[in-house]
Image (cartoon, rainbow, N blue to C red; front, side):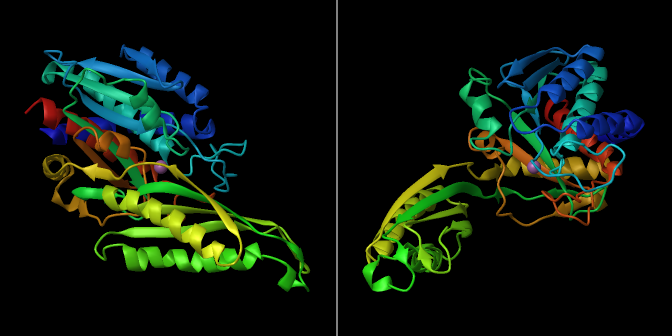
Length: 388
Ligand code: NI
């Protein structure tokens, strides 16, 4: 039955491609998705789909099937924000102003619009209620998902499922990637200031060198992952920003260090935060320096419900054929979809757009032939959950 949904999604391809290009050209940064939000609302209006606004620029659309069941909705979710990257694709619909849909959220938004249009047309063929969540601010702390939940958008409801997807440059067009259980990592930002006593580089015996203390601290902290972490728990601590703004002969008073901590275990996550503080403070103390450690707690892990993952496998095979199904490994990247997944039964899948350039790169070009697959996967999951 869901194979017909793929055919309908293919008939809609010219339209969804047009929407995707319009959204791409008008890329907007996190929590500033005003034109994108207005565009989404316009398309929903054109198709008679009711909605309300949520989390600032977000939009929550609602489609009732034969018997409305707003207490137990299926929620289909797309993110809408772009990144502060200068686009280098040369596409005729490239965004001119320094924002770029380099993470495919333009395709996510267009695919959800397409899925809602299909479900609206076929609402006499399923029971219950589908909500379409166009979410702002996935790329920026604290994550639009946390804002949506804090507003209580789903309070009083017991959603049957949250379903979301993300484009994947590594998968071929037509492939849907699935992984049951913990799929993506939690992410926290580690911000450390190391204070010492700077001065002349030729007279270090008079100083407490924060550059040397920071070097020792970074090396010592890697041992948290290798010594304190259980070997089978994925865990990464990476520092990408180290600022010691002295000169060849000037040792600065202070060094700023920023990094990311990611894992897939909530108990270890809290313990690791404690150890990061301890190791940082005590290591630099040995050099007569002082560390101020701040951990900005970010997104939780993305957990794929095993029952929903099994249903998704069945959906892929019924809708596109068994050849479309790709079993993919866990990832140490993060997604604010994790906030939904730790609260409600959830499924996060990936759909192939085969790009040579990776995500978050100015040369990222998604293959638009993938759109009907994204549209159909979202709509077909709703059908599977509501039409039995
Ligand atoms: Ni993304």
